[in-house]
Image (cartoon, rainbow, N blue to C red; front, side, top):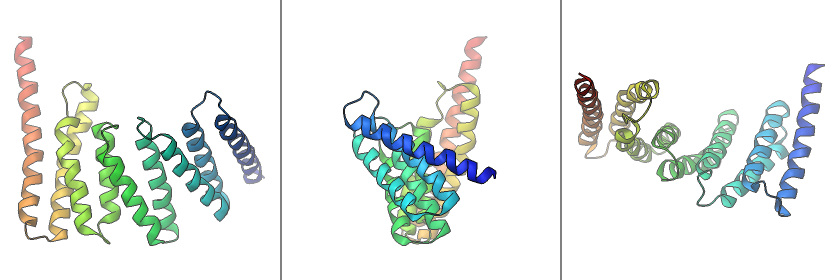
Length: 220
């Protein structure tokens, strides 16, 4: 049947992935971290079809090695988020608090690294805040607030028109999420933090509108 054929193909891909990782460890040119991440994704795909815990464990171990092997490289944030996603998805299917907590830490690390783009960091912060909101609302508020502080860098006029429009559409959404998270966290300065996030979002939109108007005036 089609499922058996698909699993056979995945089995072969896993075998080839393991061989590639082993070859990279022996000094081949292909970056080992990239190969580890690709192997992990293949193992994860097989795990989704078979629910074999060994595949999940190997995928997680491979991603941890990829993160370690890519320390200081621009590719590391991607591996951080990939491992966070795997742990987060596994937690949704079979809740394990340790998986959730590690995923939050990974998203937070990805959100805080200067190696990634502002848009990537904002997305990581939002995912971490989503996961943390119930068990750790203050941490969730801190994470999404860090995303708000990145908004001015994401909504740059140097972006293409389409990318800029998408970035600006996120400003109000992220600001509102930060305000809501601050109020849920309920710290003594919750209202001030909520208002501050909304005001920063409005300031970004206002600044972009002024810059766009200036550009149009300069064309005439």
